[in-house]
Amino acid sequence: MIACPIAYEVGFEPAWGLIAWRGMVGLHSLVIDAWSWLNYKAVMTDPGRPGSRVFPELAAPWLPDQDLRRLATYKLLAAYDSNQAGQLAAASGDEAALERRELGDAARLVDTALGYLLGAEQHIVVPGAEHADDEEPPEGTAAAAEAQVRLRRWAEDELLPLRIQQTERTAVLSGDGVYVLAWEPSKGRPSLRSYDPGFYFPVWDDDQDTDFPTRVHLAWELPEDPVRGLKPRVRRITWELGPIGQPSNGAQAVGDQVDAAGRPVRTYPWEPDRPSALTCYLTDAEWQLEDLGRGRTVDQLDRAKARYRVRSDGTVLDRLDLMIDFVPVVHVTNTIPHAGDRWGQSILAKVLQGLDELAATDSDSASASATTGTPIIGLAGAQLPRDRATGQPIPVQVRAGAVWQLGESGRMDALDTSPQLAELRARSEHLIDRIASASRLTAAGLGTLDPATVPSGYTLQLALGPLDALIGSMRLAREHKYKLLLKFVQRLFQAGHAEGWTAGETLPAKIAWGPHTPTDRAAVLDEVVKGLAAGVLSLETSVRMLMEAGYPIEDAAQEVQRIQRRAFDAAARLADATGDNGAVREYLGMPAAGPEIPQLPLPGLGHESPTSARANSGVAGPADPARPAGRKSA
Image (tube, rainbow, N blue to C red; front, top):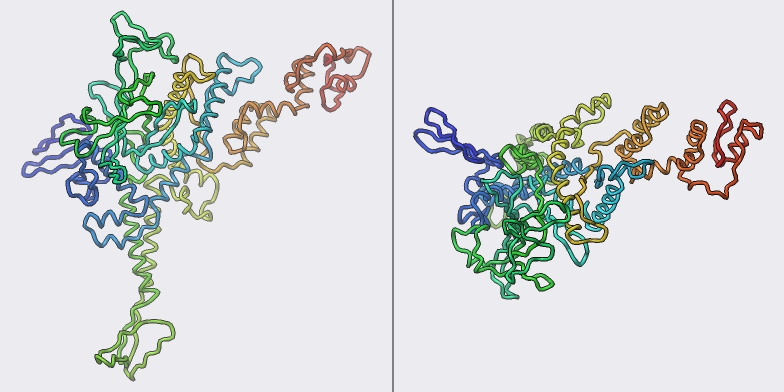
């Protein structure tokens, strides 16, 4: 934050995440932080005040003050996503907001951005695994291929695509998402769970320059349960990095040692040559709300009043040593945070006022359409029916088949509101275009662009340029976090001594996203065929291009092998070029020729023609008298 006191002069005073402007006469504050785009909402001025009808839960004493604006933002965005922004505004005192028309525009923006972000499919890729089946694979490719197979098997067992959908939709909507990993002994693999970012409370040590917190809390309130006799309470799960502790019985844990300074150290499987003095402790406990008291936030709850949870095997979850040296919690941001900040921004951040304008216009359109469909009619000189009891005229209703008797000078005038309705509809289209432009999803990306107005594919590509930049930035913000997630998965397998996961350096792995825009598959196929025939593209590159274009190819290396096993013409040319049928058999995926296969005389020595030699060698291909002879027998 930066504090800027102003008294006809401007001075800068370093503080984190806040810009405050102070005048000579009065005190006025302009807060600029990761959520300041919501400052136009009156409810954001003091979201944690007692008695708030909009954010009553934020008055809880255990919530830190610095997190109130973040939590209030999450709730506001959730209301927009579920078409309840009007109800939220009504709770703040705007009774007219109950008539607000919300037609799912916010959810549409979120779902559209999510679809482009994820692409058609996601794959786990370990660099080097695609070369494991090469004739002379580089060192380490076999291990990479094996790790890729195991990670993909884990992803299938843990429903990784579903977890990604859950977390990423929350991240696109709220700006933040949270993954939590834990070793499951009963399953023999790490489990993966997605949590609401409103439960996430990292503790940052400002004295240390680090990108990751050493202590993380997940905390939320549990309601009263009269059946079980439980009062309202707070549950908090804590992961904390700290020095390896000395057991109360004085005996070291299995594998632990003591270094020269007398500290307990441990050698982890992923760093067998570097002993570490750190470990991660897990605590899972509950506190009754009435026992919290003032001044004790989520990071300062009284341990003496905690009720610790017990694991299924009877272990009390009070600073349980997890035997790992990292916090298995991964925080995903929707955008690249600003320098000095750690939180992401929603896809709705820059267009929320536009959505308010669109909802107001839709509400006006609904009112105008009512008077257009059932117009307001003025009658003059009409003989209206009267109530016999009171003698008062009976209100006239406009309906089909109604007949009114008018006098000689009578007339009927109808109020025509159709021009206003047309203007409102045009304004709605204008606002949608502005929202599409400001959000960088573009009219083409939202599907509102008229195809007849696009003269060429190049024009469409230019129209999608902002969307390409947006998705590239969103994927860049996540790239390192998913690498970290897959690194943690491998290390948990190693720490759990899972079968096949031996000690050694953790291999880099990443998530490969599918193409975010439609691809002209026919054009890509034509390009691949021409490039491969001309010899300017390798078979491996061609297959990879087809995969990126959306063709149903699961594994590039296996697809290359399938193609080679049927490329008999190419095998014949290989035999002509090398005269080595062993290389030809290997190219075709055939086993090496054994001694039981008879040796045939070479062609060109007066024994047989090249055509019969090809037939006897087991290499298929068309007869070509111009092809040089000299091929060995199979």
